[in-house]
Picture 1 (cartoon, rainbow, N blue to C red):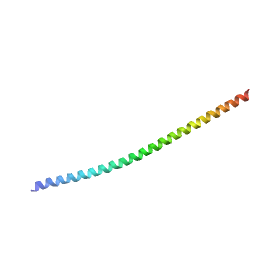
Picture 2 (picture 1 turned 90 degrees about the vertical axis):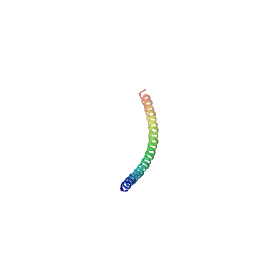
Picture 3 (picture 1 turned 120 degrees about the horizontal axis):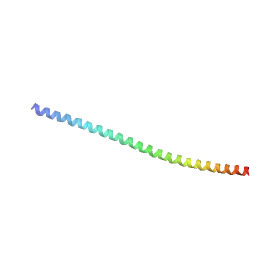
Length: 80
């Protein structure tokens, strides 16, 4: 009888360890999914920021080119 009871106790221990492992794995998965969601939101925010900065850079570039062109025209008129 003790042999069967030992086997049953061993089975019970293994089942309990498996349950704990599944719980831990699910918690880790949930945590990873939350971190992934945060990362995706951060990426989206940074992509918007990059687009905005690129747009601002283009505006500044165009303004500088316009100013340089105006300055060039002014210096040509002064030389002539």
